[in-house]
Image 1 (spheres, helix red, strand yellow):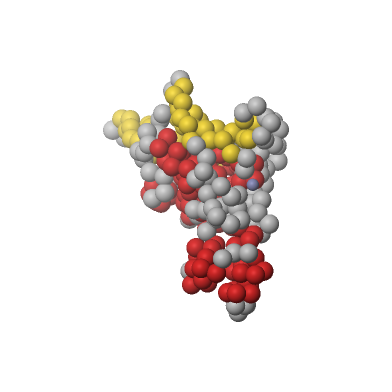
Image 2: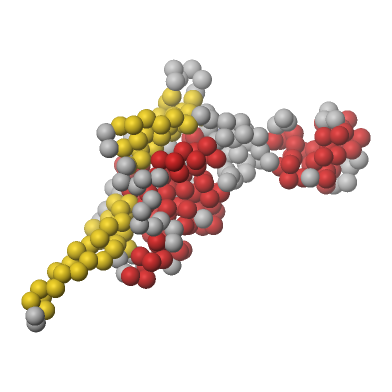
Length: 257
Ligand SMILES: [Zn+2]
């Protein structure tokens, strides 16, 4: 497997019309491999599972984009990155706490972590009322530059421009991650006085709670993009309660998972 930069350079030369022979001489890649790349450039562009799309010489977007957007939502909602191992290899540990209230979330979190960093092992550990999903990689801080000292809500958070591109294209997966980690969908009971006594009814609504006003802003922007009406129920709580808005968000999050 050749490094991304080597592959990209060879591909650029081939696309400019250089012969297999001259590219082979320039890059020391054998001609049959170059022929394969010339005929199937998508094979040359695919990153190897160990490579990081962000610290490559020519950074690309993490893939698959939908899994990345979901994982970003989970990470911002309830994830953390800390130094892993003995520190000598500069390995980082990504941890996401999956509350047992969303059955199936654990599997989806494991699957998304594996998809984004295929070479890194994913471990799960049962804790009181929740399961911790963990993966070690040197590159978690590259993929989640929101990492920094202190808790997320005590820091100013911005999405990197490349993250914004992904979130703008995948607002549903991003919102799904946020609501799976820090959200809630439940029935809101309402009592109303009526001429023939008291009427009780309930309706479904979503709440997203986070102490970081920046994360609330990211959530609100994703909901806007999905066409889901929302409001701040409290300074740290986003509420989605209108019937059509709940129905729309159900397409991406859903009542039971
Ligand atoms: Zn990296």
